[in-house]
Length: 117
Length: 110
Image: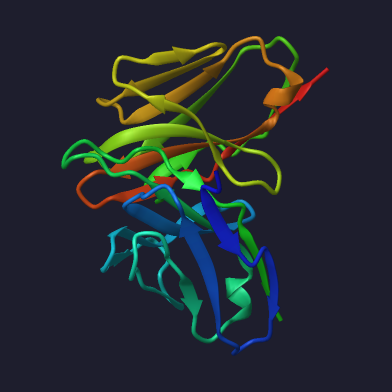
């Protein structure tokens, strides 16, 4: 039972490089999201998606792109990495109930620890 | 001001103590609420959902006060293994935005 799988687990980049963080879930969840976690800041929502072909911005979307071509996958792209993007990145997914009922709690991946020099 | 605010702590308590955390949310449209637990350098994991009528799961009790827009978590008979960061979460159903608080750190000492 894989759940939410993130790759890679660790990555070091140089400023200006591009990279894609991968996230896949095998629970047929409609809702997927990306967070970054910095010391003392908690988890901040970057982008989220409520289904294939639908994405929206979270609290801190600048510098990141996402796409959702399938239900299973939700990659996060850094187009030109900056030291301020050094962080731990978590992907999460959940089922979506009927309209007005709210989301189910989220399942998280193990995280990607990203350092940008 | 963040949409979801928590006292960062840390709370240092002895084993067996009762400890309570509060969390306030600013978006009155928030519909669903949860408490998550996060161990050092690990992913967050669901601790419990928070229901309007209040709910209990063993030593843990969650309460929701919609009028004052806060949720609370009470831990009774604290164990060493309860040491972690506790995150509260508010979901805006209409926008599907999931907003986490910054977390409250708990240290339970022998």
